[in-house]
Length: 109
Image (cartoon, rainbow, N blue to C red):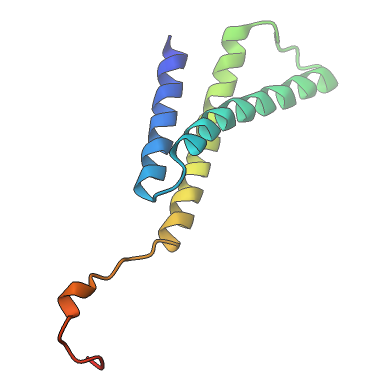
């Protein structure tokens, strides 16, 4: 149940960000959730391989421990993606100049 709430809030945050910058809302909301799971999978996979190679003795059948390893990795990946998108979109924002105010004024000023 908590995982569903986490997915909702991650997707909502990216949905709102893309809405503020007039980007594809659902694409980035879904992409953020996919990124969360992919980052968690990659970290757990790397730890699993290292555990087998170096014989660390981790219990890889314990799903509670695996989900605790994947949680910060997914959140960190989403945070990095969010800041990357926010910086990129802030640079490319086009400010619309209200030209109605300038009717009748000199062109040079």
